[in-house]
Image (cartoon, rainbow, N blue to C red; front, side, top):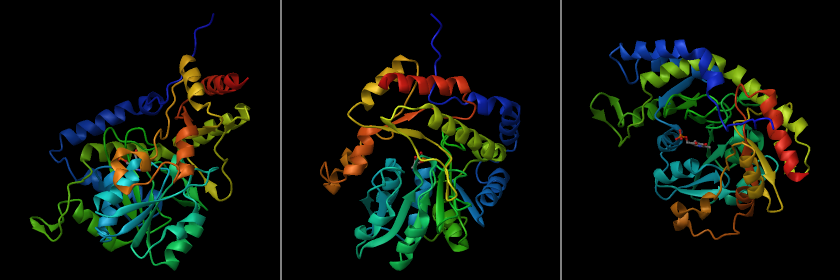
Length: 373
Ligand SMILES: Cc1ncc(COP(=O)(O)O)c(C=O)c1O
């Protein structure tokens, strides 16, 4: 019997191996520079990333959660305010609103895209609503035109959580440049990842960028002058140097994810496995995650079957935010957000990463089809 091919959920080697020498040199350069936080490496990355996204300003920060929180805080959002977030996202989006003192208000997604449903946003707006945070989940851009219209009509701030969508485009414009501000995470497994925690805020608004920079540095505009109670969330030089040398490869890496997605779409033929929508002239996704939806209560059995066949999977996310202990205080009962609950019960993410071989993609597709055969 031939040996089973293992398919990890993520393998950094195809991405990192060709860059090892460059990465070592960058880390050594920073190590010997005697300057470790917010120096030339950070400045260079901020310039390059702003240019890549197509905005005027980028502020390197500590992580993606802080990036969201910093934007909301810079807008003055806090206690007593409400912030609209998707019901189907990683908890960081909601926590960022909570950390400002505001209350997150969950809006359900569209089942086929997993993204916040623009048609449901207006009904969630109250006199306390101050901002909308959309999330380009799984690397697919949200439908921004109707969302921008609602935000404008009600005078609300609008920002994007781009933690899963580095390089994705909506109508030819990159995520992060589709609203007042974008928040990025460079957690190692993201499409553009650091070697630790890192994040960034991007915007065309000079005042917002400055305020974010100050709040992220203890609320300080001039050294030891603190005009606001800030926090410590700064991009360090090692991470900035690594991100700067990886950034020129991002489009190639994303194109490879699109290639793999196309292959899955063609090879996974089991009708029981609902797949992400393909790209079109409006939506250019970057497939941070390739999430199948498996109905009929069979998701967990499929997962066990894939594990048995050497294929790693992840569930995004097994418990929706409103049913987490962290959000008990909102008293949202089970059944109140049925689409978020459906995602939690049916979603399974199969491997997708730069450098995944055709044979690995075929192995995964065969196993998914085999389970339903
Ligand atoms: C949608 C989303 N928002 C925010 C974050 C938070 O990013 P970080 O882990 O860098 O704080 C993540 C990261 O997992 C995410 O997936």
